[in-house]
Amino acid sequence: MRNLIGVVLGSRSDLAALRPAVRVLDEFQVPYEVTVASAHRSPERAAAYARTARERGLKVIVAAAGAAAHLAGVLASHTTLPVVGLPLSGSPLGGVDALYATVQMPPGVPVATVGVDAAANAAFLALRILGSTDPGLAARLEANRQNLAAKVEEQARELAEGGWRR
Ligand code: RP5
Image (spheres, rainbow, N blue to C red):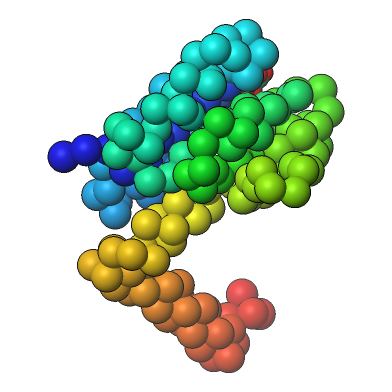
């Protein structure tokens, strides 16, 4: 089966931060690939990845990078596929640098940026994009959404029964 989501890391050192995203993608059983391409250290590789992404069957790109995190923006500048940006902490500036570098894109070249280190949400956003045209996946996402609501109901019930004292 062809990969639908392309996950690109700025460095192999970003792999640990990506784990929550991988868990979500595995849970929803959507085929994906993971690779490394740096906007600054290997700009040609980053550009080639984005330029060939559509013809290789990818529907969404998730780009994770820290520090001067221009990876998502560079990928978005070479494709019209949706790009989800995942800014990572770990630099001396704690991820604010990566967030600003990822989110502040010029008009016409959007990057859908999730929170700093919000790897699970990067995966969920990619899945929601795919789910807009995949009814089966949309149904699984809806079940997940309802499960989240059911957990809140359970917590509210527990607190109402005096759990907040414990
Ligand atoms: C960024 O610089 C990478 O995405 C990573 O978060 C950070 C440090 O990279 P390494 O020096 O560990 O390769 O480009």
